[in-house]
Each structure stands twice: as structure tokens, then as C-alpha cells.
Length: 101
Image 1 (cartoon, rainbow, N blue to C red):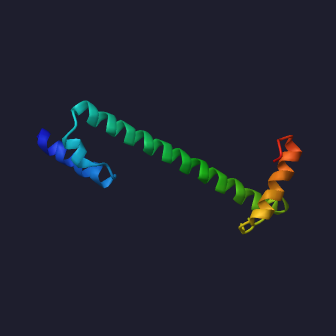
Image 2: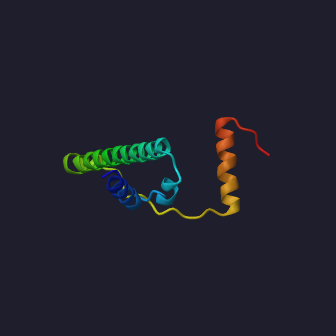
Image 3: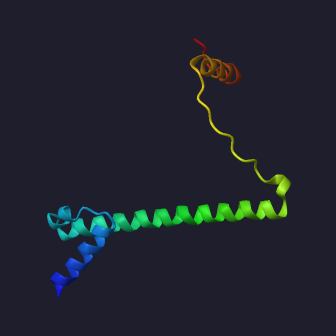
């Protein structure tokens, strides 16, 4: 009975990406810690998904109800040359009182 439960648990953990071989070399307490860490990661990812869904809904609401407030499509980023990057950084340093070299 216990062996079957462990086999089922390890199979499930393996599907979740947990190192099952390491589990066989762990104590029951260490196994519990790994499972708790995995559960915490899942809760964290679920919270991120919840926040992203809320943001998508907010943007959709703005697009429907106040399209003039909808943020513009993000511009493509381009690579800056060394001279342009130096010019921008020097401007920021002057603006915020940093030291120039």
C-alpha cells in the first residue's frame, strides 16, 4: 500500500519536473520540503497568471470603453551604437546629477 502510494507520488513529481532519483536518496522530511517548495512555486505561478489575466481584462476594458486612453502598440527596440549610448547616458547623468567621465 505505502509502496504504491510512493510510486504514484514519484510518478506525479516526475511529470512536474522534479528529480525523482534524488527523491530516492532523500529522507521523508527532505521529500516533504521538496514537495512544499514545488507547491509554493505553483502558487507563485498561479498568482502571476491571475495578475496577467487581470491586466489583460483591464486593457480590454480600456480598449472598449475609452480607446483614446489605450496605450499605443509598443515600438520595436533597436540596438544603439556605442556613441549614441554614451550620449544618452551622459544626458541622464547631467539630468540626475551624476558624475561624468
